[in-house]
Image (cartoon, rainbow, N blue to C red):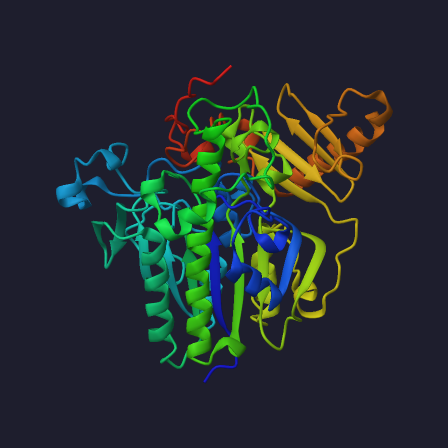
Length: 485
């Protein structure tokens, strides 16, 4: 038997760091995430690399920022080969699909490293990085959905290279397939890595999409733990948003999706206990990006507004890690870390001793996990979405939008809610200049000019093909929507 731990990696879709009871939200029910947090360490300051799904997921796997891997928006097409869809070829779901694109082709992911080191890797849930029909990057077991999103009760799923529609609740299907993988792979000699990529709590949030037992938890909730603010003037008109009773309806659906997913996490934890492998399993829980659900008057993630927003609610994600006997229980850390740190951390934590590319921006946080060490206050986090870039430390956040702005500056100590933009206050001109210089130098070090986001006309409405010099001169992003003004 291997001395390496098994790994259970749970990734949710559009879950803000605030959307857990263990993070202080008294309205939401997440007993199993709270249980997981008590068994390990929860991060208060963990960030995605980009506040939208496909770029964030690409960064989780590769350790590269969007301006290195070239995925700058959610992938609108390139998931499926139309000629392989059979009777579903003319289904309206797949109207924009033509030829599949492997957006991460030629790149090294941490799952590649795990497979190289004897792990059997399985995926249950959302992929959304192109060519969903085909197993990629070290995975040898593959159950996914056809595109980036789906209805909860009519999901287009892919199994054994075939696409079909399911009428069971997709959260339960993803959980059940993950449990099947755990049971099967536990019988083998090699350690397993199981990725459980839920579509929850992404919309749709209609009542008929979710189990009644979870929806009833919130039927009479007043949602006092979530800000109730007027709709932001930059809110896009194509996203679900609202005030008054509509606000409550949307929050009810979102919270329901979280709680139903939380129940799935509970089943996974119970299965590890039942098989008596909890002690030798590293469990990681996180989300692809944050989410505004009325925060700042915004409904949506980074592309809930135009220009794109980089508020903490959009870029901060939950992150919990548990490994009995290795990670001390019931810890909370203030250390600032990012999804682009994960590949180094796994390499370090598991002692894989793989040589990683020198141009990766991340740093291992294995010392935080194993020894509870707090990273110092000099750590900075950088995020990007198209022409918008952010630099953040414990005290300050600066957002620069190329080429003309608008730009933003926040003192996070005095103004943690990011309510007062200080960009025009001359008292802070030196701070702004220092942060901008640091941001520019950092991206100069890591951005690939062939796919640099500041040169990309990202709309927030989806990416159609590979970008930059790989676009063959064709349009890369879907047309701008009609924004609410």
